[in-house]
Image (cartoon, rainbow, N blue to C red; front, side, top):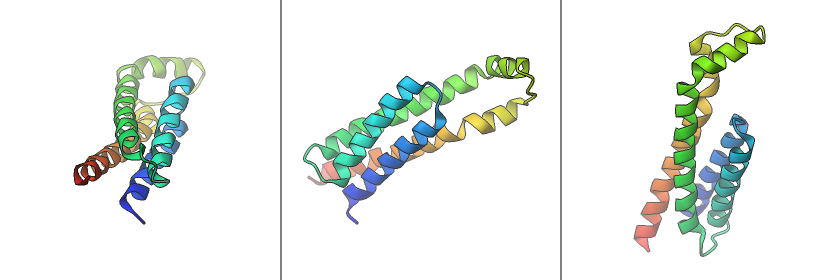
Length: 123
């Protein structure tokens, strides 16, 4: 399996993880589409694949960081809303439920970004 295929698979996995988070569906769908398009371009070795892979990776990293920060900043508001629905949840339970997806997506996107940059420098 070539390096581009591996990078593409990482971006596709990041897109799948992103859609699993389901925080803001419109933004998640847009970011997922960008990640999947970047992954597709790399897996099928399109001429635009590496450059779009870099763009998709940067979008994935930025979105995951913003999403994680928003989860953390607004956790008390979310916990208050959840408790009004009759569900008791501690702060750590909420963070363990919400933060793994952005963290996984950010890690996959950073690795894909670094691999894309290495491949571009080889050219």
